[in-house]
Structures are given as C-alpha cells and as structure tokens.
Amino acid sequence: MQQKRFLRLSLGWRIVLGLILGLVVGALFYQNKMAIAILNPIGTIFINLIKMIVLPIVVSCLVVGIAKMGDIKKLGRVGGKTLIYFELMTTIAIALGLLVGNLTKPGDSINIQTLSKVSISQYTATAKTAGNNGLGDIIMNIVPTNFFEALGKGDMIPIIFFTVMFGLGIAAIGKRGHVLIDFFDATSEVMFKMTNWIMQLAPIGVFALIGVTIAQFGLSALKPLALFLLIAYMTMIIFVVVVMGLVARFFHLNIFDLLLVIKDELVLAFSTASSEAALPRIMEKMPRYGVSQGIASFVIPTGYTFNLDGSAIYQSLAALFLAQAYHIHLSLGQQITLLVVLMITSKGMAGVPGASFVVLLATITTIGVPASGLAFIAGIDRLVDMGRTAVNVVGNSLAALIIAKTEHEFDEEKQQNYLADVKKVTAEKVN
Image (cartoon, rainbow, N blue to C red; front, side, top):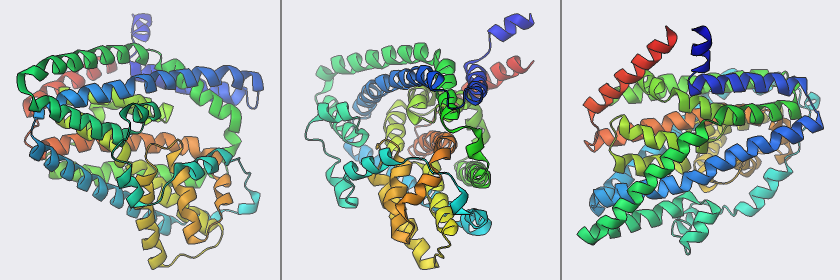
C-alpha cells in the first residue's frame, strides 16, 4: 500500500522531490564540468517545451475570450481596471521593498571587498540591446508592425494587442466568425492536453535546472549573502500574506484558498524560476475556479508582462542593499526617485531575458551605485528568482479573480465546488 501511494505522488510532490535531488546532486558535483554539461541541456529542453506552448495558448484562449466578450467598451473598461490594479500593486511592492531595506539595512553588515564576483556580461549585453527609452518607447512598441515577427520574438504585449483586435473582428462579423471561434477553442484544448503531457516531465526539468545552478555556483556562495536572501524571502511572504491577503479580503476572497488551489503551479514556478512554466496551467485553472474565460485570457497574459510584484520587491531591495554595501546614503527624495524609475524601467524591460537583473542595471547607476556591483549578487540571482517568480504567479492569479469580481463575471458556486474538490483531494493525500 505504501509503495502504491509513493508511485501515485502528486505532480507537486514529485517536483519537490526533483528539487531536493537537484540540490544534492548539484552540491556533490560542484564545478564538475561533465555534470554541468549533462544537466544543462536537460533543463533547457524542459523550459523550451514550456515556451513552445505558451504563445499558442495565449493566442487561442485570448481570441476565444475576446470574441465571446465582443464589446469594445467592456474590453476598454476591463483593460483600464487591469492596468490600474497592476500599477498600484507593483508600486506597493516597490515601496515595501524600500521600507524593509531601510528597516533591516542588509547591506550594512557586508564587506563588499570579501564578496566573490560572478560575470554579468550576458545582462549588460541584454541591457544594451533592450532599447528601453522610457514610457514613450513602451507605448510605441505596443502596436506590432509584423504580428508573426512579434510571435517569433515572444513580445507579449504586441501579441496581446493584435489578438484582442482579431478577437473583436471575429465578434463583429457575427455568425460567420463562429467557425474561427470553434477553431481556436479546439486549439486551446489541444494545447492544454499538450501542457499536461509536458508537465509530467517537470520533476526531471526541475532536477536539472536546480542541479546545474548549484553545480555552477555552489552552496558556499549563499553564506555571505544569506541575510539578504532571507530578508528578500520574508518580504515576499509578507507581501503575499498581508498585502495580497488584505486586498483579497476586501473583495471577499481568501488568499489561502487561492494558494491551495494553485499550489502545484507555485511549486513549478518556484523550482523552475520561470513564470512561463506556470502560465499554461494557471490559464486553464482560473476558469475552472470561477473566472470567466474572457477575463482570465486577458488579465493573466497581460500580468505576465506588467504585474511583476515579486520582481519589484527584489529590485528595490537589491538597489538599497548595494547602496548600503557601498556606503551610499540615499535621501528620501532619492528613494522616491528610485521608486519612480523602477516603476517605469520594470515595464520597459518586460519580456527581456533576465529582466529583473537588466532593470537593476538600468536603475542603480541613477543612485550612484556602480553597475559592476551587480556582479556581487549575481551568484544568488537564480535563488532569489525562484521566490519572485512564485510571487508573480500568485499576483496574476489574484488579479484575474479580482477583475472578474469587479465585472460580475465570477461564478462563486463554481469556485466553491472546485475548492471543495481540491480540499478533498488534498485531504486524501495527507491521510
């Protein structure tokens, strides 16, 4: 019986097992080039499999959702609410990071000369080619000149813009558009089926991704920066439990119920440090949890680009940490400027590989911290990234629930039934 239960472990527990094994193997094969060469492509292939299905899911679900919504005024209202909500939550996240950084002062106890550096050349190269010229540049890039080029680059916002227009066009031609709705509806079902297949490989992918990270940097890299890592995680937990918890309660939602429902996706996002890994499953799960398909299809992909609460917390904390480590005192005015700069640059870098690090590169020089200072925290970036990615996933899931509530497109009976099923399955696994 015990063996049968072990073989029937849920995906979440199998991913946790892969995470633990990855830590052990990575520590055992520290700086072993052969082990790194074997693990690296396995992890990369898994992430590529996820990336392969993300955009088809976003496009197919969004087309169907917008076509069924069919009201451009309603879409404008939903879009406005969504962006305002994202901006408010991101600003609170940045402010919380600055507040905690000022109270705990993690950089004061660090001797910058004793820290080992890690190459950040890949991030500096990305920062140079990202072409972030402020808010005007972001707005100009919303409209794609070539939709297929945007698909190829994975530029989420231009893709969403075109797909929304296409969905509205389908709605405008009436019955003749039903064949396209059926096509994209069937496409989304096929992609979700593929998602379930790919997710079975998640424990192996997580094992390889964590293993190669620890094998490259080693556990010893954590020791000097353990306090900063601890403070970053505690701040993220406070943001989820307190800030998101209060926001959820205001809209008659329970943040702990949401965490229970998306626990497998959180483990996946945390262990892979990739929002993309959880995106397909979240888009599939939110409609089953009571959110209308149209709202879920619009809010979640948009949040993937604009609602990066975990990243915002990390960026503000890391900027203060480095300033303190270099003994640079920041006045209240400078910190407010830092908050505003982070608000803008974090949106401008959305979708850029290593976005959080690139945002920091574009930001810390404005407060007098040398860009080379980022080399001191690059070694733990992957470990912080795991936490901030999980927070981003919670934030986007909660956003879908709240926007659906405000639009009266939230089925509470469906929510309660699904929640009861999840609790029943969880209880059976515990017993």
